[in-house]
Length: 96
Image 1 (cartoon, rainbow, N blue to C red):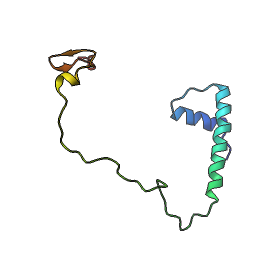
Image 2: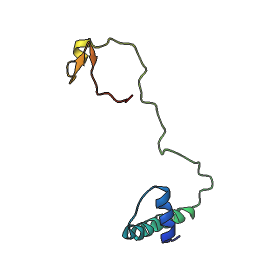
Image 3: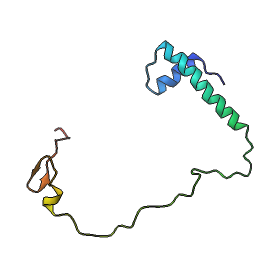
């Protein structure tokens, strides 16, 4: 499948991209090549091949949460750029 300039413009519009004329030509060629590769993949016989999301089994590598000792406040705040009253001081994010 070969994409024309109008199709590239539609894709760019949906992606909220402003493209130059040179970029439109470049992306038309590149996207056409990508679609050609997918067309080749469509020719493969996949009957009996189960759909997969990962080639290897997915394992949960996280450890169980276990309660433990907390850092002392002084140690936790030791490298804080700013602190006040035993808390980190950070810039205000929400404006009123």
